[in-house]
Length: 384
Image (cartoon, rainbow, N blue to C red; front, side, top):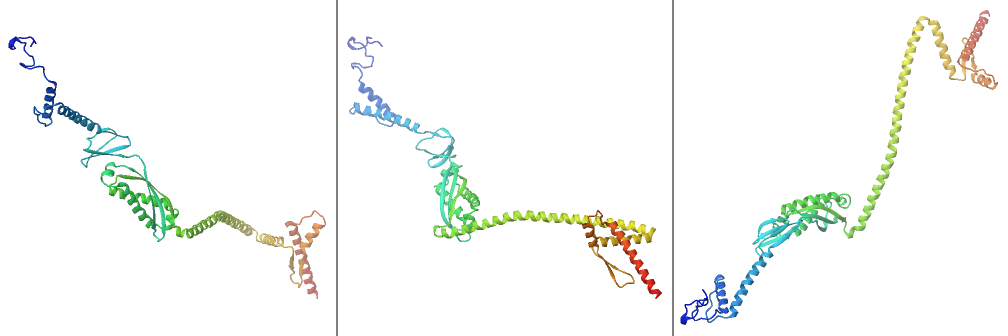
């Protein structure tokens, strides 16, 4: 409608705002109408004509802006970042809802509670206890435990204080293992086995409690007797070291003697075997010689008998320097000083050498001379 369109009274232009005799619209009235509309949307009533003013309209608009800003801030507060080494455990109104993976996440703030847990960081806990061993001795043991969190849900939800539970479980496992071990093993070479046993038993307890903790390694850092008996224990350690030293010396001596004795024994065995072979070979040779000699004896008994006699005499004379001859029919025993005869031959410088043939000739000559003397003696007795 045009401003100058006829229709008004007294030929006045018609007001496009719909007012007859009214003037231009009021800005305060427009703000009041907006306030009434917002109040209707948020549950507020319309204000009366007498309550109209600038202050209520401005406070309503500010309230709307505040509400929208609060909603925006609330939404932004729900964003959070989970690192690559972490996992997020989400509780909605105190009840387990989800476990989120690494990355940018959003959960309603004030509704969901998110707890991030590092699952790759190796944590450590230490323990020092004084306890009794199996043989009723008191020892002091310092232990360290390295562990990681492999189940963040159990770590956050199942146990109120998982790390305190780890301390209690470590103490229980250590006392159980040490209580079943002698003091010598605890203080000396058995610490590695104690660490393995404590590791196994501790992991079983943590799995039973559902703590979500995985034990990586258990180390027995120190094990010693109490201070009150440290002096006596040092004496025991020194005596044990002396024992080990003496054992090592004895073992070294044995290592030097045993191979030598074994060598001598092996040499005696070899010599015995060689002697055995020699005796067997000699026996076989003597048997063969006897068989051949028997064959020859059957062919010529007299010659063979004489030959055997001479060989026997030669063997006897060859091993002695003195010869005693018993003359048949006589009372005197003749003595042949072969040793002096041999020495005379040697001192005279002659090249003559007394060997088996010379002894045989000498023996034959002596025997023949003895026979002649005996025959002559017999003849002289017969003539008388």
